[in-house]
Amino acid sequence: MNERVAMLRGDAVYRVHWKLGTDLLVGVCHCGAEHDSEDPVELWDWLLAHPEGHRPPVAAPPPPDRRPAGALV
Ligand SMILES: [Zn+2]
Image 1 (cartoon, rainbow, N blue to C red):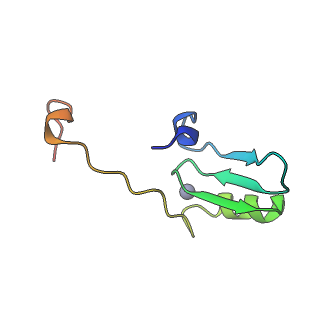
Image 2 (cartoon, rainbow, N blue to C red; image 1 turned 90 degrees about the vertical axis):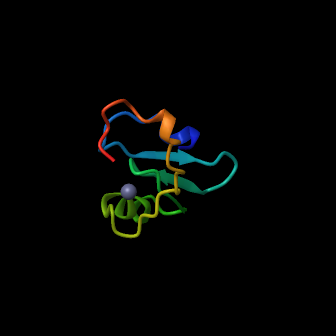
């Protein structure tokens, strides 16, 4: 999980970051996928199309000793 996703709350939260000094916007989906665009409409279309075209960063599975007790595996 990266820093941008860590800021999110809930499972339907989207963020749009503006890269300072550029016209580039970075959309971050609640699933962790990111997409760059200069066009806010295109960016929101992508965000709202979740999960279509979304590839969240692959997270390594937690080591066995970090799983909560009683978790079904
Ligand atoms: Zn998504």
